[in-house]
Image 1 (tube, one colour):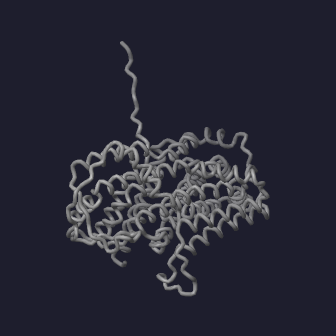
Image 2 (cartoon, rainbow, N blue to C red):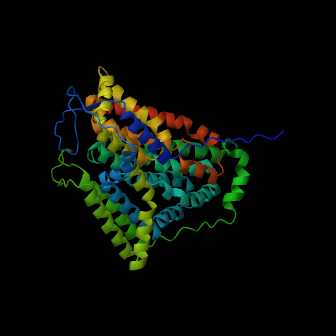
Image 3 (cartoon, one colour):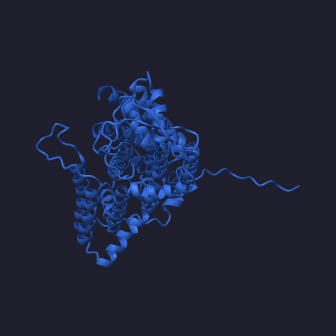
Amino acid sequence: MTEKKKHSFKMPSSYTIIIAIMAIVAIMSHILPGGAYDYVDPTASKLEPIAGTFHNIAANPQGIGDVILAPINGFYDSVDIILYTLVIGGFLAVVMKTGALDAAIGGIINKLKGREKLLIPILMLVFSFAGAAFGIEEETLPFFLVLIPVLIAAGYDTLVGLSVIKMGAALGVMGSIANPFAVAIASRFAGISMGDGIGIRLILLAIYIPSGIFFTMRYAEKVRKDPSKSLVYSQAEENRKFFLKDTNMNALPEFTFKRKLIITVFIASFLIMLWGVLAWEDLGITFIPTMGWWFGELAGIFLVAAIIVAFIAKMGEEEFLDTFIGGAKDMLSVAVIIGVSRGVTVLMNDAMITDTILHAGEELLTNTSSVIFSVATYLIYLVLSFFVPSSSGLATLSMGIMAPLADFADVQREIVVIAYAAANAMMSLVAPTCGLLMGVLTMTKTSYSVWMKFVGKFLLFIALATIVVLAAATVLM
């Protein structure tokens, strides 16, 4: 008898899922009737449909040629956010090339020798800030093999290191202040400013980050006092041999004056961006001018910042260009998924069925409270994030429908953006469809079941806290 081969199911990539959705939309365009709303201002960037004005119009069924051209037209429609993303990629690459961020963390480690317990809150704050400001994810990879040996040597286990880095960054992304790969893209396609809802996101960060630090420190202290309490105790010796053998504890570069200047520019560029995008007058602050900047100006900020960093680091022209272009190249996957995802909206708009789908949502929302809509939006994004883990892809794909639906539910569009960001980042900590999570678990020799046991109850608390804040914000806004 021949032994049957076992084929494990592999989840298709975000690209495959989105292309499948485009094919479904094209088929739907031959079935659904065309429709249109009257809009408050048809020429505005934020198109607000007027409830009760839906009327049928002739549909425009989409064919194979339209499906092929949809991603191309999606790129045209998204050129500003794509350019901004590429510039951010170049800027981050230049900063990382200087070793300034690594050196800053190395400086923290050196100053806290003998007081390693303080490493946990300080490093989690660092990674959370990076997550909230720049959506740091893949950039955390080098730190696992550097920081986990330090934490194991201090009497902790690999789960503490995972929590400090992976969870620390994710908690910041959940309450993103200006994450270019999540909040910026979502705001662009929701037709609102990136600064809208920043107060709510700061409240969420004030819940997420201290809670995450408390959770991690509580577990870490329990393990330090009694190593047998570790969820990975059975492989403790194996982990010590793997992470501490031939480990250079001084692998991180020195935090020189030059690198301190670079970190200053790094932080300043983020603060200037916030100054430019926030509507200060709406916040009751009149002594700070409202600039009304958007992606063109923001791309300019980070381009100039990259040049300043290169000048401080004394990079030659060729080295700077190679590094900057290399960083932009690393963002091509993000750029491509934005264009492809936007192709879905292009198809629906060209087929004249976008408003038809919105009308179905309007009827569904009739007699539904705004609080229920806000909570349901968060739960929907939890599910969607499992199938489309890409933050940029999900934002581009969904905001064209979800944001106008908020208008019908009498909910501010920023609530939808906040719900999306919080749900997508939380799922990045648990979804096996998230390649980065599974890669990091493999790198640290941590089984998925152990990780789920470690984070499960805490993330349930985070989900409930998010729902409460979204509901309260919806009522008060």
